[in-house]
Amino acid sequence: MAPESTVKQASTTDMVNSSLMEEHKVEEEEEDGGSDIDRRYKYVPGPEPEWDVDSYDGREYESDPEDRQIFSDEDEYNEYRIRKRQAFASKGFIPEPLSGIYPIKYLDEIAYRNMTARELMTNLANLCVKKLNDQKGQTVELVEIVRVIDSGGFRWNSYITFMAREYPNGPLVEYQAKVMNYAGNEKPPFPILCRPSPKLSV
Image 1 (tube, rainbow, N blue to C red):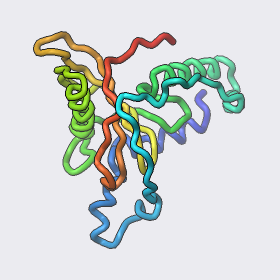
Image 2 (cartoon, rainbow, N blue to C red):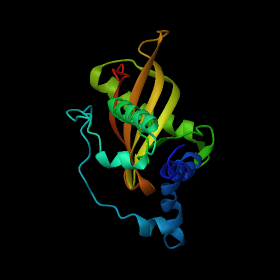
Image 3 (cartoon, rainbow, N blue to C red):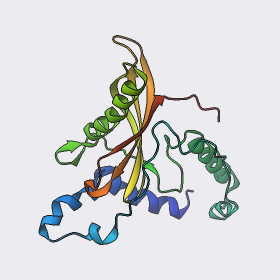
Image 4 (cartoon, rainbow, N blue to C red):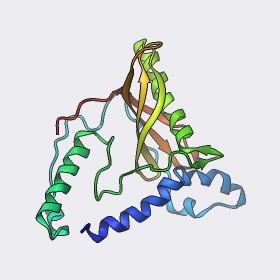
């Protein structure tokens, strides 16, 4: 049986899944004197990430001994550890259990300003594709969004997996894009990386 904390986190995830960019309502509500989000989030300027540098690089997976206390069943705990290691090895591109980092399930529902989550994520991923093509002289073209993982608060990262063609009429290749977003459109989205999906060794 799954731990109670998993059920609670799954329920909160539904809000993220059904309204991917809820925080961006700040911009629209400011005209009416502000919003609850204004009070919950305060923008603190920070350095922008460096293009084509993965924050996971150089890090090693470390298990937390306290996680064992969550599980009464040894098999469930071992399954959790496997999924945790897989999530870490993916460098953010698959969900991490019991972390509050979950996939956006409802990509075809309206998320922001009459745009579906899929359309919004396509635009964000294309920022990364354009940056890749401009920087490296490539001709990668996004074809279809596969899945999206979100993590963060006022500033959050979207980990977007998509199918692409590296040249006209070429075979489909799975790619990854990572982009930083800002609630309330405080700053424009910032492309972080774009690359073919690596093969997981875990």
